[in-house]
Amino acid sequence: MGWGDAGVIQAKADDCYRMRVDLLPHTVKEAQSRGVRVIGIIGSTGSTATGSFDPLDEIADFCEAENLWFRVDAAHAGGFVFSEKARPLLQGIERADSVVIDFHEMLLGSSPLTAVLFKNGKDSFGSFAQKADYLW
Image (cartoon, rainbow, N blue to C red; front, side, top):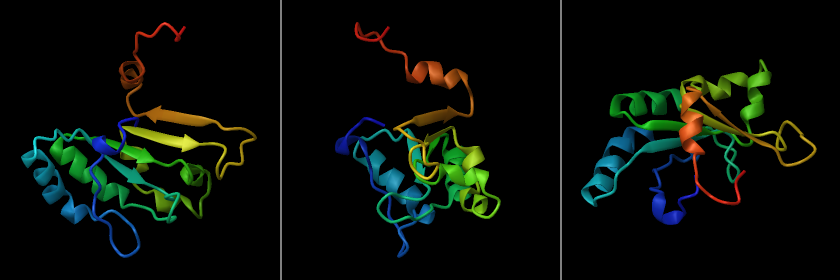
């Protein structure tokens, strides 16, 4: 999301490298006690390093309860939505506020192509609103 290491709080993972949603309340409270404002949680599907799939429905439940943005990094496995066999691994992705999918990964696109999808289309305008001379 462009914030660098200082803008990221690492969530705990289980032995299969999936996010431990049961520990998120503690993680968020600990960050807040240090003066950090937590604005969202990023779940991963088909993580680049491990191939793991976070429990998206559970993360969505937490984000809804805490009024946090829920983003899914589906860069590698987002194409699973087109597979009846693999689609269950993405259970809960439809609840995300935003999803990122790389079509040049498992969808075998011929060149780097990334889509950022928003549940609410109006959110996309604020996300990319910048005043920079190099942007037309």
